[in-house]
Structures are given as structure tokens and as C-alpha cells.
Image 1 (spheres, rainbow, N blue to C red):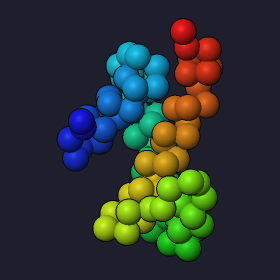
Image 2 (image 1 turned 45 degrees about the vertical axis):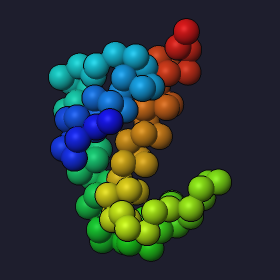
Image 3 (image 1 turned 90 degrees about the vertical axis):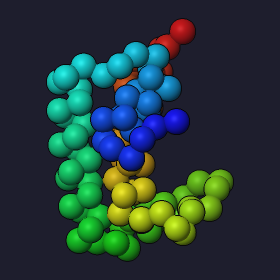
Image 4 (image 1 turned 180 degrees about the vertical axis):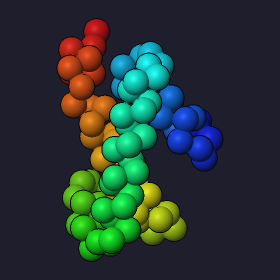
Length: 88
């Protein structure tokens, strides 16, 4: 389980997807992407809702739509890494 802060969430996601910790450069880039995604979804909550309307599971309405959409962006990036696709 991860904690509420960016670093612990990212470390858990990274380890889950590619079985290692992110480098300092990866953390820097992903933090910048998360900040951009949050800014975008804060200014356009409908876009966040649209992103989260896809998939087999319903969104937990108790969670902040902006935060969930921003982290969805991050996890999508992680899953598209060559390292994730060719793992194992």
C-alpha cells in the first residue's frame, strides 16, 4: 500500500509496473506530467470525468476527480513504457 504523498504513490506504481524504483530523472518528469495533468483537469473537470468514464469499473465518487484523472495519466504513461511492455 502507498501513502498519500507523490513519492510513495509513484514508487508503488513504478515497482508494480516495472519491478524497480524510478530514477531521479523519471521522478522529475513524472512529477511535471502530474502537475500539468492536474492543472488541465482542474480547469476542465468535464475532461477529467470523460477520461474516468471509460473502463469496466465505476469510479469511486468519494475520490477527487481531478486527482484520479491526473494519476490515471501517470499510470497510463507507466504502462506504455517499453520496459513495462517487454517485462519478463
